[in-house]
Structure formats: C-alpha cells, structure tokens
Length: 579
Image (cartoon, rainbow, N blue to C red; front, top):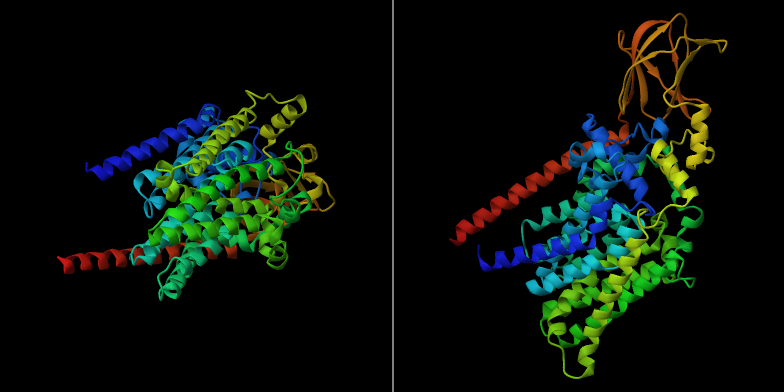
C-alpha cells in the first residue's frame, strides 16, 4: 500500500471512530424516541422493509399503517434512506418490532458516509490533513448532529448531507475536463432527490451558480449547460419517486403541510424568544457556528496566496451568505413570489446548504490555524474554533440526554400516546387519501375512535335493501393485492374497511371482468358485486404518474450507463494515445 492510500485509510478510520463516538447512544438505544420526527421515520422504515421482504419491490402503499387501514406514505416520501437499510430486516427485524434500531443504524451510516463525502470533496482543494479537519467539522456541526440527529431524528436531512459535497466534487472535476464528471454529477444529484426534496430545492441554485463562479473565463456557459443537463438526468433517475410525488399530490392532503404553524413566515431563522423555544436555540447554534467560520474565512482569505483556493474561499463565503439570507426574514419577498419555496415549511432548511461551506472553510483555514500569526490576533481564530468545538460537545451531550426515554422518561400522557402509536402506527395526516374526511382522523386519538366504528379490514356485503349478506372470505392480503372468495346469492355492495385510493381495481378471476372500486362516504373502499361464487382480486394498479415515472427512471439509467461507458472508452483511447 502506497503512502497516499495508507494516509487516506488512516483518515477514514479516524472519521469512523469520530462518528461512532458521536452516535453511540443511537447504536445503544436506536433512533431517538423523543425526536420530533423519529417515531414516524422508524415506523415507516420498519413497514417499508417488511413489505419489501414480503415481495413488494417498491413499497408505496403501506397496508398496515393507520391501524391497517392503509397509507399513501411512499407515493410522496423519498425512499433512498429506506432502501439503504432494508438488508437489516432479516437480521434484526424479529427483535426490532418498531424499526428504531434499524433506522438508528441507518442514521449512523449516513453520518459516516457524509463525513467521507466531505473528506473527498475537501481533498479537491486542500491537503489531506486539512480535508480531515473539514470532515470533522462537517460531522460535529450542531445543526447536523445536535439538531437533525438527536432533536429531530430527521432521516431525510441526515441522508441528504451525503450528496452536496459529492455533487460539488463532480462539478469541480467537470470544470477540470473529466469525462466521468457528468455521470457522477447526475447520479449524485439523483440520489439527493431520492433522499430529500427540500435539500434539493435549497441546494440547486448553489450548484448552478458554482458553474459560472468556479469556471475559468470562457468556460462558464459550457459548464452551466452541462450542469443543468446532469441535473435533468439526475431528476430522470429519480423519476420513479418524482412521478407520483409531484403529480399525485391532489390525491392526498399535501397542501396542509404548510398550514398553521408550519407556514414559512412563522419559522424564520432569526427570532427573539425564550431559549426554551426550539427556534431560538437554533438561531443561537447557527450564530455559534457562523462566528468562528467568519473569523476563519477572514484569516484564510487574507493569508492565502493560491488563486484556486482563494476562488473556493470566495465562493464558499457566498454560499454562507446565500444560506443565511434565504433562512432569514430578508428573503420574504422571494418566498412570496416563488411559491414552491413555501412548501419548505421551514426556511431554516437552508441550513442544509450552510453546513457545507462551513466544512470547506474549515479545511481551507487549517494551515493557518496550525501556524498562526504572531501576537494575540493570530490566536483569535484558534480560540474561536476551540470555543466552537467545546460548545458543540456541551450542546450535543445536552441534546442527547433529552432524546431518549431511558434518560428522560415519558410522562403518563405521552406514554399513553406512545403506546397508542406503536399499536396503530398512524401516518402524518397530510398523507391521508383525499377520499377521507381528514379533520375527523387527523390525530391518533381520532383515528383510534374511527377504527372502533370501522374495524380495519372488516368486510360486509349488503343487498339492495341494506341487508347484510355473507361476507367474502379473505384468501390473501398483500400490500397492493387482495384476493377474496365470494359466495353471494344476490348482487350487492361490498364495503371493505381499507382506505380507498385512485388505482384500486377489482377483477373477477374466472371471467376477467373488471369491477370498479370507489369510496364510501368516509373514504373506505366499496364496490358493486354480481351474484355468484367466484374469486375476486382487488389490486392497486399503477396509474399514469407512477408508470411514467418508473419508465423515465429506467430510460435515464440506460442513458447514464451509455454515457458512462462512452466516457470510459474515451479515457482508454486517450491513455493509449499518450502511451
């Protein structure tokens, strides 16, 4: 093993040790059960993995969610972080009934992969030791570690942190003329889309501006076009997710995602309130990160003589200004004009962009932190970084201590709610099918009461006068396919206590006759059945957005493979010509 590879391996082991140290409570207890989003992510991941191993290659309809009434969850939620951990279900599924350990291992894995990605990105403009320092800072930043991991349990953001450094690395190689940079950028961008759409929306303007800013004179337009095409191909790769997620939103209640307290103008970064309020703490943590970063940027910008590194410093300074501006009240006019931004819910999602240049500036300032100027002024950056790291340790320890019920037991009311959620697995109400009356079942308690009136998966066949006839027998019940055995002396209306959703279709097995499936007055499935004895299959079929999305995705993967093979072939030709 040569010296360079040995050094890289040593640095990666250091990052692994750091991640394990920072996340050991997750490895011990699973994903935070006090986290704002942790419970939903754990239950979704568990059901996703269970259905995957039950033969559903892309689980969209979670049949056991909402007390087995069904959920549209993964018609709209990105799935990369779920596919990344489905292999754990056969290994630990039996003793992890609610998915907290599986999802927690996924969180730890995402932290390590994000650290590695940042390390290789920083290696493109800094020394290996400086790149290691940048990756360490990327890992321990309060927004990344204390907020997203321990306070929120935000799987989308955690897995989303892997891809921006890799995208910027691919673009840097594209500027340098690499033939493999285009497919690398497209693949990384597609993975970002499949992880977290809000991060994609926040980061995309940065990527396009980098094409102009970092390119040599005369190459800006070419790199800009290539970047745009790579982003388009990346979206095509994610077409299987984007199709229904973008074009089926009217089939659920996604517009309620930005109602009430989740309207963007209620959640700006800069708020003056009690430190007991989470938004106020987030502002303080951001300032705690911003101040030493600004000091290091100023020091490195003043002392750096290399033109390329100065260019990187300038651009990363722009990224920080852009992220803080878009997270603050100053950007309100942009939100009012560009409506998709309002769906972010939290303008502070732009801190997903902020954490990237903080790491880059740390790497670029490392040589001057190691060898400071003489006098007290030379020690200011060192003191600022040291204070930042000390505060980060304190904040992370405090956040972790408040994130697990083994250290912070649930009070009786929360414990009762927890037990109910573990039993019925309620999904966030915005994902309820449009056929339901959402305000009647938008809390776990309301859903539980609804289930008492309409027991899940119960069926009854009613005659023309409303009389109850023999109910069909369930032969099998899978996520998107139900098989029934019908024996009815007369035609009637079959009511199935499972949520209706566009795409459910019935078919007589003996004749192939198609029987439409509709919704009753509370959003449950109902259909008109003919008399007789026959088998009945009810299937959730792929409609246009789902089918077209998957088709575009497969075509995009084919195109990506072709471009990659062409690039490899040209590289071999170039090498043979040089030899």
